[in-house]
Length: 324
Length: 253
Image 1 (cartoon, each protein chain N blue to C red):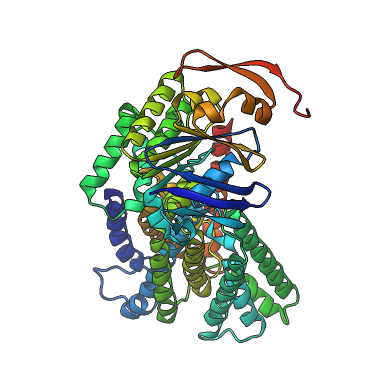
Image 2: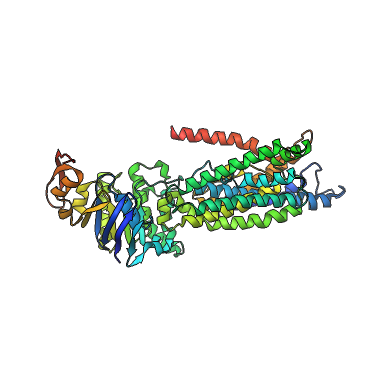
């Protein structure tokens, strides 16, 4: 582990316990008189903090892997269409009024699985994996994203009741409020499995730095890498959407934040992106918790998009200056 | 360990190409634009699935080999190499060691140091590739291939961006590789380089082998006139020849 990763790990070790204290009810660790402090910590704050760490790590790593795979700093894990399709599954459960308990995350995971199956089908039809293979595959992912987005909009416009419509729209904004240990048990194993799968592709992602032809000459099997990406991105992003809704921009921003502190090989970005993603989501969630807002908490998805969109714009302008 | 193409067919680009390449030789593949030079090189590197025929290394089809095993034996430098991230020269060269990722660290370091020194890149070792000139970048990419210590070095126009001194140095380095038993196969646009430095020249025309032999045989004036459609004459001494183009022949004739 590099020095930079160790610093991020140390930050995380400090922020996680601090995040447990922040919220609508501030908990003073030196004041044992706060009523229900134990329950708040164990049943609300701890699962929420762990979810932020798990989802942030998954999205950060997925973003780094995606940018390495597409050799494009503007790539985001959402490009494969897995997040919108998982969201479509969740929206369907809300639309049908069967979103209680495990049903919504299971519907979202079925959605993510469907997108992965479609991508696998497209990958299976994708010729010999040469030349334009990755570009065509990604375009197919974008089409899946577009179709799922349209179906989500259709579900909203045909919502059976105004309550269902409001529930769908609110859910789509993404949040970690009111999550429980059940959500941790859903997200943790799937995300960890996804991270392990993405780690298997690290050398191939490094080789892709030289382009597809040179990468294949170095022994990269394009089909194997495609599978690793589908499964890795599917598990990390799918489980994230299943428990927290759409949380954008983490996968885009985090690799950019950590890249200058690495040797810029895609494999060097995976671990720091996981740690920085966890840290970013945890801090953003704390801000959402403590920010005074009439009518409840600021939604995490909105907060990250508010930060992410100007960052993206800055990135585009910087790239444009680089090209000029 | 010969590298052999048997009656190789790749749709619209190669129509029944058969060549046997020998280790320890510098082979140049020449031909006009669109003749299929880069396609043949990529096929010899095992990167294309042929529509007919096969490419074999010592009798084993490249298609049947594990990618990592093939990557250890055949080093390939594409015509338009890209570098997606602004890595340092050292990191770039280290990518050439990917097929050897399980090798001991000292062996990795030695292979990289040798490749960096061979391409005269010691002073630029820690420089980001975005700050390199076109020639320096080409040298760094060549060092990346050399770092893998391949038994076959296949490069598509490796001299295209090099200045005179570095082109001469690379040619000398490749000659040294060939003397050590490495098979060197180069796609070359410059016929004089092929004439002066190759042991063997394969001339392609419209996806077929038009000539195959020593530089004197394969690049004689009659073949140049027939394949390139120009009247040309070799000038100078053996080993330092230049091609004088005397007139443009009418290709239709």
